[in-house]
Image (cartoon, rainbow, N blue to C red; front, side, top):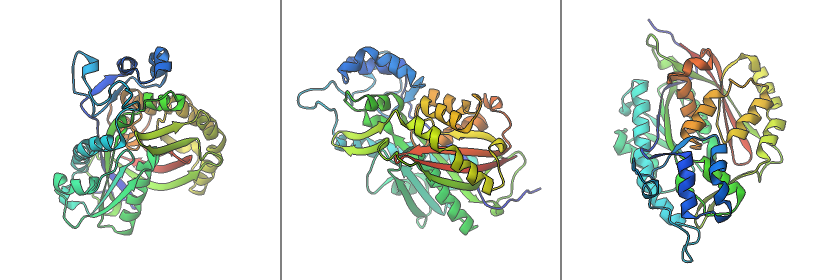
Length: 382
């Protein structure tokens, strides 16, 4: 028995984090003892816990150990010779070593869940903003995944937290233009390699939020898929790209001599509250859909205040973003891969039943430098 649809669908997803995980309160203590932010040391534990994050993962941490200070050796106390920590070149060396293997495991999980062979992949889209190397991530995946040597490649780089939405949008366009296409989208971010030695409050907030992770999705045209009983597909219905006016300097991501420097202004939540609802309502109305028709909200958790601002802007009750808040608590802000973690939280976690009916429309949000919102409308059928 088959049930065929039209349009691009997400056949399967995968997520992974590094083995080294640390509780947020312990992480604050490590930073205190390193003395990276002397002026803030006394309040770091409270600030870290206010982030909404309970634990985070990093490629810099050993998998286990009784002494938290000995679990990493990359960050050392500031000295006269190195007052701002490792150089950008040293940080990129870590990225080149760890990003590919982490993304490989993630893509393997997505391919397995999609029920296909890696050799069936016709297009590969990689997504990352926390590192650069060439040959890049895409090149490394050819051998590690066993991709065909004629697989076409695209890379979406340095777009920030909403970049996985862009990757899925490109995959949708490819799949809908060629029913034979099977597109693998893989995102990996090693945010922890950009810890800043700073007294800047915005940088310290960023230090408290970001973590490492990877996510992947397999996208193809629904007309080529024979659905198996009980199999879940998320159809990509439409997308919206929204530049929020008067906000270009509120969220930035710049390359410095000692890592990439993230700024996240306290004005971001108010801009979202003021500017988000009307364009989204107009977009959905053009599709014959209302806000009330949205069953699931997948909002990238840039931080607890950003989630609060979406709640207020869209007039949601407090339960609608519980999957996003749970993902932030358990994993931190992993930048671009995070939205897939939220999707899997709703679909596969033991607490998924608490998020209400899954069938129907899902709205996926990501916010990135600009300030820019990237939004997908998905539809789930079982």
